[in-house]
Every structure is written in structure tokens, then in C-alpha cells.
Image (cartoon, rainbow, N blue to C red; front, side, top):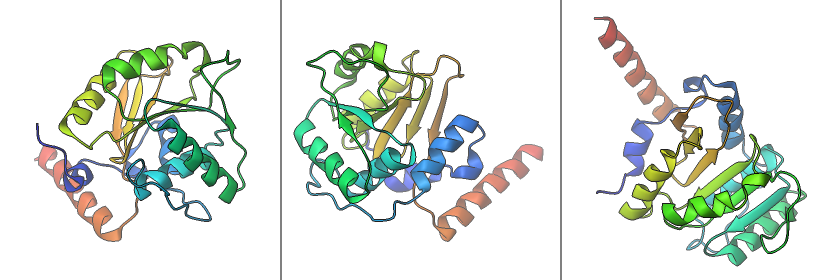
Length: 209
């Protein structure tokens, strides 16, 4: 299976105008709202600059304070999140799965791992996952296997909202919401918005013809 190119992702993506769910609109707005100070990644092999910016936007704009990092590279990820919190004057509490966690988590960050490993990790925190808990999956388009695992994860019946930003995947467990998936672009561009707007208009006219 060929790895999805960024241009292919853009062609099938939407911005705020393409999101009709109030909950997902709130998430999309958080993804698009830039932080006051862009945080530079210290380790692009672990997290790209684009993914770092998206992660910081999620953390600050959705006011995520209680978080857990799982999987590979957790030390580097925690250091990066701590840097983001310090530079943006944001409070963050790092919790560990090695001790009981009380209450819901605001954010779960899962470093690259296969889908069969991701779900048990999430299940172990099921009592701490609420309808607004943001679960972030890294490197979903880094390889054909990563894309296969992401597609498998999206199909899980417990995951009702999934968002592909290309650089990061985001999932929510919201039993009160119908299952939906969105490709959301996190950068604004007049050229891209015009091109994709023309695509949508053409599709609408074609259906009516």
C-alpha cells in the first residue's frame, strides 16, 4: 500500500466550513488557532515541527492539563510537552500508569505503535477516559504499516470521532455521538481554500445535473 501523500490528504480535507458537528467544529477551531509563540521541536525524529505545533495548539486551546504519554519515546515527548507548557505559560500534570489515576484525563498521547498494541493501552485507561478526553496518535502516515494501523483503529466501534491532521491522528470515545471521521487541514492558505472550494462547488453542480 502506497503512503498517502500530503497533496492527496489536502484534496480530501476540510476546514472549518466543512465541519457541521458542533463538537468537531470546536476541535477544528482549536487545531487552527495558533499559539502566541510557536514552540520549536528539540527532536524532529520523535515529533516533526508541524506535529509539535498541532500538539501545542491542542494542549493550550482545549485547556488540557492532566495527561499521560504511552508507547515509544515517552521521555522525549514529556520533555517536549513540558517545554511547550513552560513557553506558553500553561499548567500541565504528567500522570503515570504505574500508579492509580483518579478522575478523567484531558489528554492521552500515544507514540507510534501498531493498532493491536494501541487498543489495550487505551483500554487500561478506560476508567479515566471521558467524552472530552483527547487521544493523540503520532506518525500515522510515516509508513504503509502505520497507515494500516490508523485505518484499523478508526474502525474500532468504541471510537466515535476520528480526525486526521496528516501529522497526527486524534480520536475520541463519545458514546453519545454518531461515528464520524474528518480529514482536517491545520494550515490556512487562500490558494488551497480556493482550489478546494471550487472542487466542492463542482461536485455540488455535478450532483444536481
